[in-house]
Figure 1 (cartoon, rainbow, N blue to C red):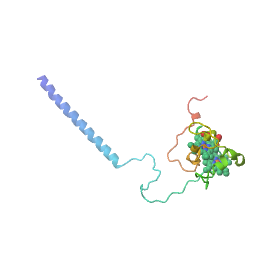
Figure 2: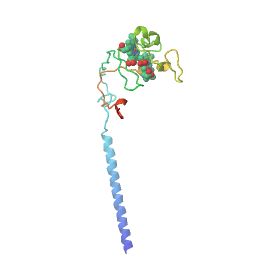
Figure 3: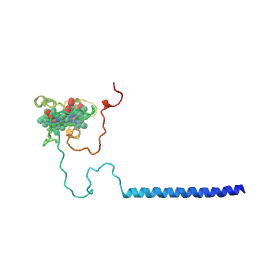
Figure 4: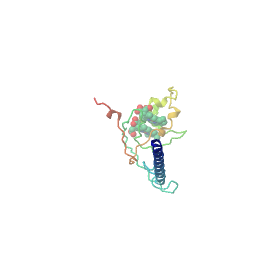
Length: 166
Ligand code: HEC
Ligand code: HEC
């Protein structure tokens, strides 16, 4: 008798467990569905609130900082930002206006800092006598600083400010 009783209870336990699992699955599925209906944007879209394919006026560009003050780098390998105007400077296969001032031969006259030694090295570390092709298009790495508002809060910390202090 006790055996029968137990098995009866067992069936009931299994039934309850199955019911609970099914209910859980349904709650989960509906939760996923309702999340699909209202997507959450954590970072504001660069394109703004307009529909992705809609026509809109291009917002004005932010103003570049052109005060000629060379900025401290946030880490040694950072390409320094351009502290002067580059409006109308041609940068094509045939002409490189940047090198008219930043090339080794021209720095004495222009007062511009020379492109660093890394700009003469090809990908195998061989040092060439002129700028290496992979450093030819300066604005692929060097940009101007503008007065644009930060899209998201910036928590960057200088390496000198973290860790044990002397
Ligand atoms: C007319 C000469 C001239 C031209 C052309 C020129 N620069 Fe400069 N550049 C300078 C001078 C001078 C400085 C030093 C800071 C200053 O006076 O603005 C400088 C500073 C810089 C710096 C900052 C270096 C540092 O260590 O902080 C970068 C990066 C730079 N220029 C990149 C460029 C790029 C990229 C171009 C082309 C789009 C360019 N420059 C065209 C003269 C020039
Ligand atoms: C592939 C990325 C890249 C390209 C392309 C590039 N640079 Fe740089 N540049 C850097 C980095 C990174 C640094 C800082 C570390 C170093 O010197 O390599 C730098 C440093 C500099 C400096 C500072 C040099 C010094 O000794 O303080 C100048 C000036 C400069 N670049 C000008 C130019 C010019 C002009 C061009 C185009 C002919 C150019 N760069 C192309 C990445 C680049």
